[in-house]
Length: 163
Picture 1 (cartoon, rainbow, N blue to C red):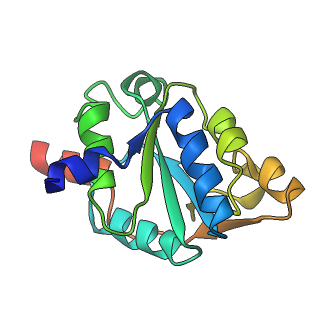
Picture 2 (tube, one colour):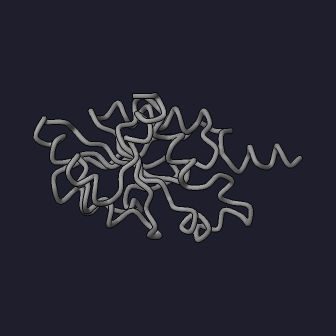
């Protein structure tokens, strides 16, 4: 199997992730979930995602679809990369176990399916604002906010390129 096939095998749908989660749960794995656009993967993302991965055995990333990125008002040019490219890039990281593209405005329905042991967001989110925190806490899981490294953002990189 080629490296590309390995990466593509880490990209799941809502349906296909269910079976994989059952296997991970059977094996006693601690599942961590986070989500985002990940339009241009940069050092800040790598730092954040690697710290999230350290909180468990399995890291699942929800990737905003192109349509949901547009609804987030990140600018007319966003997303810069299409959803399949963004999912493939994130899935290529060794510490990422799965990537799933979601169409909804929030990953709430995806969190219902995954039922992570740990839900993670960046430090710009207050714990009470994190979508799905209620679901995770109901199951006795943890909700964690990881501090961002200042000076690293896709918008900043985009503005630097334009300037």
